[in-house]
Image (cartoon, rainbow, N blue to C red; front, side, top):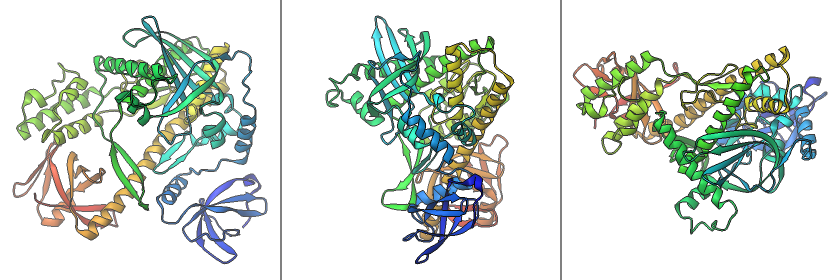
Length: 584
C-alpha cells in the first residue's frame, strides 16, 4: 500500500489485525489497511506506530499498547475522534530546533533566576506550565507567577502553530495524555522543570492584606524553578510542617504564603457569593491489578489544590483586565473565556423545584427552601446539612444547581465569568495545553512590546483560534463521556452476570427517565421508565417539577432517594442498559 507524498514521515497509529512470521496485517486509524514487515512479536489487537514514505508504510518496532488493555482502548477512542499521539514531521523538526536554541539572552528579558520559583502539580506531571513564588513586602504580599513561554516557539505560520490549531488543546483520558505540543517541548525545553533555565511570561502582583491585587505588571523573563513539588507532598507540609523535612528549604515561606493567600481568595469568593457546588471529582484509571479494566473512584480534593487554583484564577482575572483595557485602545486582539450567568427563568424554576422537594419529603422548609430573592444561591448551598440521611438529598440539590448553568465559551469579546464572579477572564495559565493560551501569550508579548493596531489577518487568526478552542472543549467532553461509558459497560456486564444489585442516589429526573449516581462504581446511569414498566407492567409518571416519579399502585421515587436497581441487560437496538427496581 502506497502513501501520499504529503504524508511522508508522518507516523500514525495502526492496529494489528493478523500476525505472521514475517509480515503482519494492520489497519490504520483512518481505516486503510496495509501489510508490513518488522512487527515481530505483535499480536492481533496490539497498537503499533507506522511511518509513511513515498513508497508505502514501514513499521516502527515496538508495541504502543497491548491488545485488550485500557491504554489500547483509550488510544483507539481518541484516534476515532481524530486525535493521535504522533505529531507531523515538520512540527517535530521545529520542536527539535527550538530545544537547541532557547534564546535565553534575548533583548528585553528580565533576569529573575534568583527568585526561588517552584511548581506544584500532580506527582506524575511533566508538562509544567506554571511556577510560583510569594514573599512578604511589609503589609503586602508579592505574588510572582511564571508561565511557560510557548508563544516564542509556536508562532503563526509555523508547522507547530498549524498542528496546535488543528488539535486545539491537549486531551486527557484515563492512563494517557495526548499533548497539543510535541513532548520534546511540552515535557522538555518549554516545561518549567527544576534547575533548567527557561523563558517565561511572569505576572507580578502586589496583594493587600485581603489578598486583592492592587498593582499588576507583566514581563518576559529568564527564570529557574528550584523544585517540582506534588500536591500531596505540599499538603503533607501543611498538615505537619515539622515532619515534612522542608523547614529549611528556600520555598518554605512561599508555600506558607500560598496557603494564606489561597484562604483569603476563597473567603473573598464566598463574600461575593460565587457558587461552588459540592461535587465529587470522579477519577477513571486503569486498574493496577488488571490493565484491561477501568476503575472509577471518587477523589477528595486537597486544600492545596484549591489554593493553587485561586492564585491561578487571580492571575487570569487580572490578565483579562489588562487585555480589556488594551482592547479598548485597539492594540491587541485578545480572547476571553465567557461564562454567562444562569437565566432568571431557570433560577426561578430551581427555587420552585426545591420548595416542592422540601414539601414532598417533609423537610424543614426553613432549611431546604431557597428564598430566591433573599438569599444568594451560593449561601443556600453552603448551609445545607450534609450528614446522615441528608447527604443524598444535598448531593441531588447540588446537581440541580449545576444544571442551571450555561456553558462557558471562548469569545473575542469580553464578558463576565459567572462561575468565578469575575467581570472578565482570560486563559493565560495553559500556554502549552491550549491554543487559546498560546494566542493569549502572543498578544501579551505584543502588548509589552508596543504593537500597532490589529490587521485583518490578525482578526481572522483570532477567530480561528476561538473556534479551535471551543471545538477542543467539546471534544474533551465527548471523550470523557465515551470513557465513562467504557467503564460503565465493564462494570455492568460483571454485575449482570453475577446478578449483583446496585445502589445509588436519584440526582434528577425528566419525563422518561431517572438520573442515578451509583455509589459503587461512582458513575451516572439513566433508568428509563419504559424499562421499569416492561419489568412489572406498572405505568410510571414524573411530576411537572421533576421532583417525584410515581407508578400505578402507589410506589414513588423522590429526588435524593436511595435507590436499589438490578441490571436487566443491554438493549442492543438502543445501545443502552436496562434496569429494574429492587425493593429495600
